[in-house]
Structures are given as structure tokens and as C-alpha cells.
Image (cartoon, rainbow, N blue to C red; front, top):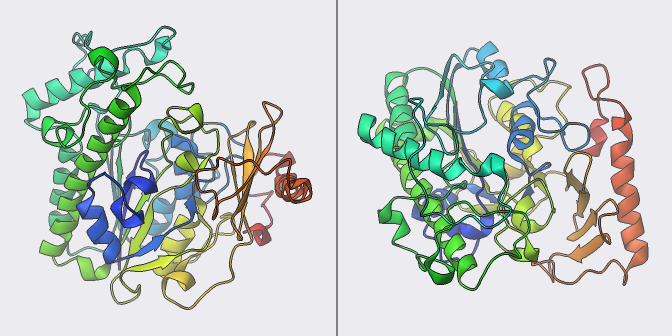
Length: 442
């Protein structure tokens, strides 16, 4: 059995047709969902770029005791485990899934694209003029060049290679697959395609309206998290750009899935498509993602797994699952041992129809800041750590989290708060192999 993981940065479940009605066009993802098991209640345990990937490759919690930082030396990277088992390993990435975060460990072939979004021009030149983009007063200096850099890299890449990301990533990954089709492989693709800055080519951008915001202003990189600076029309414009980038990603990664078919690899390849976190788009007055606040638009993730003959196509799993479960699930599917350091659980029993004990509570948060717990019955408690009143929602009846039940149901709020702090207790010291979390918390 081969393994292919496709991580799409910043992709919200409610922007994928397979999860429900949406204006966003995602035919490839929808087709894949019809061949897969879709997790309807999947969450990122720390909905931020590098922490989320740490959970996905090492199977450890991060919101409890880690800020945004590289893998620890005693973390076991899933690629190392597959390599040790004789798999040929490779990764293609244009995200912070890079050597700086130690995400390259275990990969025999690791390709990181220097012309990715937000990165300085890959040829060392100055960024091109990008004065067409609107930056509101107070725009963070460290983010000011993100759009000019992205625009410059797209221009340079088109001039030098005749293509840009994610097309380049997909085509090179397809070449790698063709060259190694007879080997047992573990392949990871990590794409910034839906991530801001939003600069989808015209063929995708033209699918969505409106094209501009207030008085024609262009906002490919909005300031966040406070959305109060937006004027009428800005939010529709921002959402349209995000939608275009999702459709662009859907198109190119759909081509990758088609290539698997052409190479006769589909039947023997487990494919997991997962996102690292969502994207606030004005809901609850916030824009973009900073690991908080922990509303559904940020914390829920896309996650689908296909494995012909073992996973019934078109099924939906409504159990609570976390991205921390990914490595154990992949190892279990491949028949490989799971290290005792991992803190999630394998979802293969649920995927194959054998059934598994429902997770009573799922924990998530942002290091040293907000934290939360979602219960199996659909209640969600958010500890805002004194920044404002804590929150309690009943997601089945209030999926948009508009009616805070904290004052109305104080006993339930207190009980969920207690569960959250009991979960935190083992992390009074930094997690290591010498101090393993109680796996009963899964």
C-alpha cells in the first residue's frame, strides 16, 4: 500500500461542495469525497500553520505546551517511520512545511519552492510595484511586502518556468510518481494555494464576483484579525478572492488525482486530503487566522480519506476527530507499529466500518491563550482566558455560534471548563518522551 497526503492550507469545510451547499466550485474535491470517507466533525487541535503540521506529522498536542516552533528533536516524524519501514519518501511544499520547521525529516526527496506566496523574490530582486493593493491604516509592517512578494514571484516564475504554484508542484509530483510508480511510497504535498495573499489567475478569479471592494479597492492581503476597518463591498470582494484560490487548488490537485488513475496507482494508494485550519472571513468580526478565536470557521478542517476495497466510498463519519489522529491512522492502515509518544488514535476502525468508541471530548486551543473543548453531544466551550466572557454553544442548533449559553447554562459551562483544565494538567511540564501524556485522554 502507498500513502499520499495532500495538505491544503486555510481550507474551510463549508467552502467545499461535499460538505454542503456553497458558491465555491470544487468539482475535484467533491468527486474525491464520493470515493472516500468524509469526516464531518474534524478539528485542528491548534489551528495555526506550523503547530497544526506538528500535530499531523508527530501526533502530539501543541496547544498545551508549544508556541509556533520547529519539531523537537525527540518528536518522531511520520516520514521517518515510513522510511524505516522501507517506503520511498518524498515531499513537495510551498508552505512553512520546510527545513526551518524540521518538517523535512525522513524524506528522501524534499522539494521546497522558493517562489511561494509571501516569500521574498526568489531571484533576489526587488519586489515589483504593487500599489494597486489597498492597505488600511495600521497595516503591520512585517506583512506589508507579502502581496508585492507574491506578485513578484508569480511574474518571475511565469517568465522563467512558464508556470506557477500550485501547477508547478502538481506537475513535478506527477513526474515523481511516474518515475517511482513501482516503488512503495509515502508522498506528502503541502500547498499554500488557498492561503492569502489571494492572487488566483484570471480563469479562476473571473468565476466569482464582486471583483473589487469599496470604491474599487483591491485587497489581496486583508489586515486582521479585527475586521472593523472594512467598508461595504470589501468583505464580498475578499471572500470572492479566497473562493477563486480554492477553485484553483481544486483544479490542480484534481489533475494529480487523475494522474494516479492513469498510472494505475489509485487502487493501492491511501489518499488523505486534509487542511491545517480554516479561515475567518468576517464572522464574529474577525479576519484571517492567528490560532484564535476558536470558532468553527477557524478550527474545523477538511479531512477525507480514500482507500479502495477497505473504505466504503461516499461514507461520512460524524465522530469527533482531530488532526492529531492523522499519523496513527496512516500507520495503522499500513500495518506499522504506532509509537507510544503519539497522543491521538487510529481512525481505521471507523473508516472500515468496524466501529470505535466515540471520543467523548475533543480539545483544542492556542498556546498560552484561548482553549476549548467540544463534546460528543455537540456542545462547545471556549475559555477566553479573561480577554472577554467565556463562551458555550450548542453546535447542532447553533452552527454559526451566535447564541452564547454561558450565562444560561452555568453548570454545564463549569463542567466543560473543568474537563478542559483536567486535560491540561499533565502539561505542567514540557512534553517529552520521558513525560508521556495519558493516552486515555484520546
